[in-house]
Structure formats: structure tokens, C-alpha cells
Amino acid sequence: MKFPSKNVLIWLGITLYSLNGSAQSGSLVPDSVVAQDESSPAEKKIKFELSGYIGVEGAKFYNSTIVKGQSREFASTVAFPTLKVNYKNNHRVILSPFARWDGLDKERSHIDMREAYYSGTFKSIELNAGIQQVSWGNMIGPSVVNVINQSDEREDFLRSERLGQAQANLAYIRENFSATLFVIPFFRKKNFPDAQSPLFYFPVPIAENNVRVDHKSSPSIAARITKRIESLDVAVSHFYGTNRMPNFALDYHTMTLNPHYKVQHQSNVELQHVFKNITSKLELANKWEDKSSYQCINAGLEYVVSNIFGSGIENTFYGEYLYDQWRKEKQFPFADAYFLGSKLNFSDVQSSEVFIKFLSNREEFTPFINVECSRRVTSNGKIILSITEYLGKELPYTSSLSVMQYNSNVSLTLRRFF
Image (cartoon, rainbow, N blue to C red):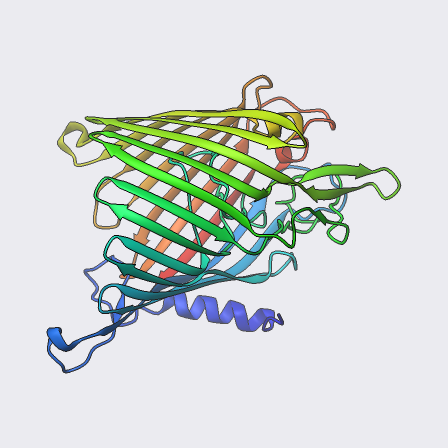
């Protein structure tokens, strides 16, 4: 899809961000637009709600790089609107496109329909059909059970953004129980940033024109059952279809990586228990691929400290561990890793937050730290300052993190909500 010129997009992003719109100056909550008419509430059948944001992002990578010619900065404009159309409270249509234009990386410039689906509720039955975002698991860091939607590798690896996925799911829902069947007719391969982008974390380029996909003409299917037993949430699920993660084979003639997406079975168990201000989480998965079995585990704790010294400030501490045997044998980064986090919420009218994240492999100490500070500005704006730093020793070229270790950066994001 052809994008507008660079100057037009930058002007549009800055102009829309700087506008205060019609929001009241005392409100810092993103506005929603609901269709208004002169009929009584009982006569209203269709309601429209528009929300989202447009923003500008920029980052500076201040380390050297082992990838020749790799850029050390990027700047982009982002738009992420969402339109919800509700009919009689039990029928709705959701449209949520995502668009990014990057001034330096043509691979990151793209439009993706994150959501475009119909949702209908019929007593205890819920039907959703179209492009959707479905998330399994409760981990803040990497998860082993979140297998429905493909990850978007063009975003920062700490964000874990997901692409929209065409699917239909039918759910039977009761007060403390649900059973859902998923049919996913199409497979989406990963999209990677350009090899010259600082967000590209492989030591050699990927052969995007030499991708193998098994099971391509057949749909993937999945089923999930959830049950709440007092303060314990339990979920069991199974997925069968094309693996969202590719196997990579190095072509020694072209020195490129050839992706191969294989068929995989995956069974999952999720447990989450809440006791006062402590939340404990456990996720188990077993994967079958090429007649081999791979075991995976996620375990985590959350601890909330509220109203610190009577100030209203709240701090949430996170601790998680992940082991993914499949990723470890395929030499993916962070396959045997732990994640630590601290999220400080100041509970002020500006919604000020500081989120500190720490991620490292267990056997090979590879500490990445990210500090993200966010704060509302004006009536409908937000500013986000993020610093990512690799604090470990220099890694050899053969390490799966050999490129990531040079990706220390500082980024600034401005968003205008509507």
C-alpha cells in the first residue's frame, strides 16, 4: 500500500497531537465519541463509539553494532483508531486498524487490521467472526501459552505486539465457566524489520522470499475451557495447526536464514490464584512437532503495595520465570529466562507511571533493563520516555543475543487520544 510523503505524515502527526479538540481541560481520560440522537434512551438501538490515538515516535541507539550499515535511529508516525458499533447491547462490530510509517525502515511502514469482526451474544452463546486479537495467559513477560495470534516482530521485542488473525470462535459462557472452539482459516507468517534496522536482532538477513509453510491450505483449530473456583482461575486448552514460530535453516551460500513453519500440537494448562494482594500464576505447555515432544513452563508472582505512606501511590512487583524447551533447542533468545518488574502508579490526575522491567537468560547472564515513564499532558495527550540498556558482558557472535546486546537506546513517544 502506498503511503503519503514523509513531510505530510510528520505534519499530520504533529498537528493532530497538538490539537486539544473539544475535551474539557480538567479531564485526562481519552474521549469516546458516541452517536447522539434526539430519541429517548429506550428507542436508541445503534450506538457508535470511536476511540484511539495518533502519535509520533523516535529512538536513538547509542551503541556500535556488529551488523554493517545498520541504522542507529528511527522515527515514525503511528495511528491506531478503534470504532465500535453496538446494536441492542448483544450485537456489535469492531474495527481497529493499525498504521505505522517509518522514515528509515520501509519494512516497518505498514497497515495491519488488528481487529475487524462481528460479535453476537445469544443467551449463553457468544459468536465472534472476523479478524480478532485473542490472548491466552496472564504473564507480563514472555508467555508459552499465547499461541493464537502471530507476534509482530516489527515492533520493539519488549512490547509483544500481536497481528490481527482471521478466525471464528464459538463460546458457551456461564457465570464461572466457559468453553470456546476456535477455527483459524488462514496462517500469517512473521514480518521482520529490515536488516538495516536497529530493531533487527538476527546476525544474518532472513530470506523472506524463501519461506516454507506446512499445513498452509488447512485451517488451524483450537479449544479452551476456563473455570473459576472461588479465588482460583483454571484454563485448559489445545491448539493444532501451523506453529507461529518458524524453524530457521542457515543457507551457507547466500548467508541468509530460511524460515520453515511446521505443524504443531500444543496442550496448555493455566492456573491463577489471588490471595489478598498476592497473585500467583502457573502456565504449563507441551508441544509436539516432528514426532518430538517439548515441555514448557511459566511461573510468576505479583505483589501489590497500595497507598504507600498514605500517599495513594501503588507499586506492583512482578517476578516470572520461563522455560521453553522448543525455543531453547532452536537457539531462540530468552528460552530459559526470568523477568522482574516494578510498576509504580502515582494515582494522580496525570496518570503518571514508572515501569521498570528486567529480563535475562538464566544460564548465560544477559541483563536487559527497560525503564518506561509515562504521563498525561494537556487534556488528551500522553508522553512516554523509555530507556533500554544491556548491562552484561560482551557476547560472542555465536550467541542468540549477539545483535541485541548493541540495542541500548532511548526513545520518546507522543500520543494524542481521541
